[in-house]
Image (cartoon, rainbow, N blue to C red; front, top):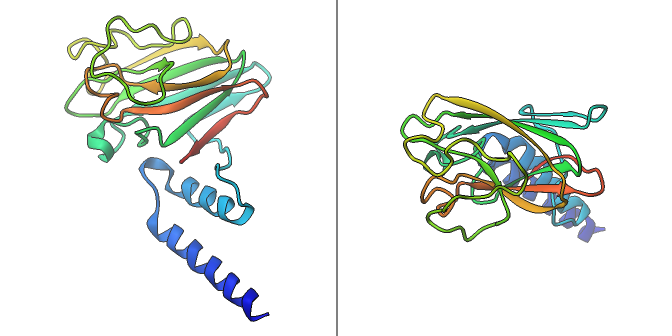
Length: 197
């Protein structure tokens, strides 16, 4: 019985520490809940959520993502919705049409976005990047002068027609290599949502 009280007190302390630490970017509360679920259930992965920047329409098989580059100061503003270095994951079902409404809130530099096959260890520069899916890249993605400039927006759409583990990255030189990327998964089992690591 004393051992059960000790274990319960330890869980309460752990949850308190988890709540106090918060999370990076816009997803602090989501990260806290996910951490608690992982501790309680013994899982290593977080639960999928649907953040306010993600709209899922199962009837029309569409996902709309409002992605903001430089949303906050994390990773020197080289982030997507406050997430960087692969610490967030968007999951969309196989065959869904995906629209990305991309906005650059970084006041200092251009950014881009595209779906890439890599999931880390990106090169400093890219030569004519080919996105995983046709149309899954912003305009002039590798150009500091012509990519999406501070205060600008653009939208593009594509079909997630191959299941797998991919990433959303910024192709502007050195950005992905210094952490401007998050995970992008196309699930074959219909899963959809977002979770943070």
